[in-house]
Length: 433
Image (tube, rainbow, N blue to C red; front, side):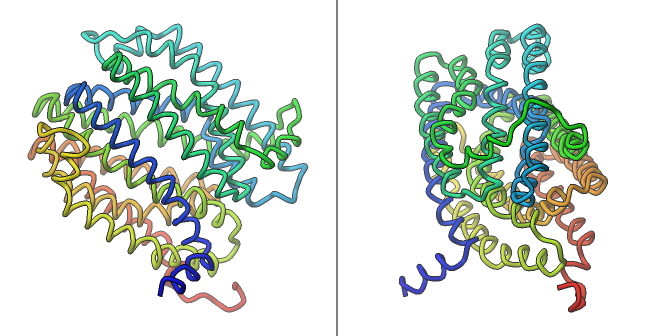
C-alpha cells in the first residue's frame, strides 16, 4: 500500500512537488507558531493589528520596487530557455530596471519617512526609523525576488524549497530574538530586515542555476521592457490596491469594534497565510511555469483538472481539520485572549478554498500576459472585497471582514469559470490538441 502510494507520488510531478514543498511548509508552520506565540504574549492584540498595517505596506512597497517582474521572469525563463538572445534581453532589462526602481523607492522612503509613518500608523504613533531601515533593505529584497524567479523558471524545485527552508529558519531566529529583546520595535525591525538578509541564503544556495546570470549584459532593451510592462502593471496594481482595501477594512473594524478586534482579524489572516503559502508555493513552483509552456486548450485543461483532482481535495481536507481544531490552534498559536478569533474560521476557510480554486485558473491570465483580462477581473474582485468587507463589518463587526472575504472569492471563482468556460468545459477539436 505504502509502496503504491510512494510510486504514485514519484510518478506524478505535481504530487512530487507538493510533497517536497510540504517540508518547507512544515518549517513555515513551526516558524509561524513561534512568532505568533511571541507576538501574542509580548505584543497582544494591539501589536498584532499594528504589524498588520506594516505588513500591508511592505507588500505594496516590494511589488513596486521590483516592478512586478518576478512572474514575468518565471514565464520567460520557463518558456524561452532555448532562446538565449531573447532571454538575455529579458533578464538584463528586468534586473537593471528593478534595481533602478528599488533605489528610487529607497530614496523616497528615506526622505519621506515621517510622511509614511503618519500614513501607515497615524500621527499618534511614531516609528519613523522603521521606514529608514526599509529604505536600505528594499534593494536586497528586490534582488532576492528576481533571483528566486530565475531559479523557479528553471524548474529547480528542490533548490527553491531549500532556500525557503533556510530562509524561514533564519527569519524565525531573528524575529524571536528581536521580539523578546525589543518588543514591538523588534517585531517591526525583523519584518523589514529578514527578507533582505534572505538574499545571502539565495546567493549561497543558487548553485548551477546561476549560469543564466552569464547572459546578463549591461544594457536595457526597450522591446523587453515593453513586454514586461504588463507584468509591472499587473503586480503593482494588485499589490497596491489590495493592501489599501485591507487597510480600509481594518480601519472600519477599528471604528466599529476597536483596535483589539482588528487584532483578532489580523490573527485570522496570519493563520490563513500559513496554509495559503503551501498551495501558493506549489502554484508558483509548478502551475505558472507549466501554464507558460502550454499552447493549447487541451494542455490548459489538463493542468487545471490535474490540480483539482490531486491538490484541491487534499487542501479541502486540510481546511476541515483546521476548522475542527480551531480553538486548539488559537491556544497554541496565541493566547486565551484571542479565543474570539474562532468565530472567523468558517468564513475565512471557506473563502480560502474558493480563493485557491480560482487562483489556479487565474494563473493562466498571468502566464499568457493578458493585461486587459487581468485588470478586468482584479477590478471586479477588489470592488467586491471592498464593498462586502465594509458592509459586513458594519453589520457584524470584525466577523464581517471574514464574511466579505468569503463572498468576494466565491464571486471571483464564478467569474473565472465563466470566462474560461470553453477551454475548461467546452468541446475541443482534435486538431487543436
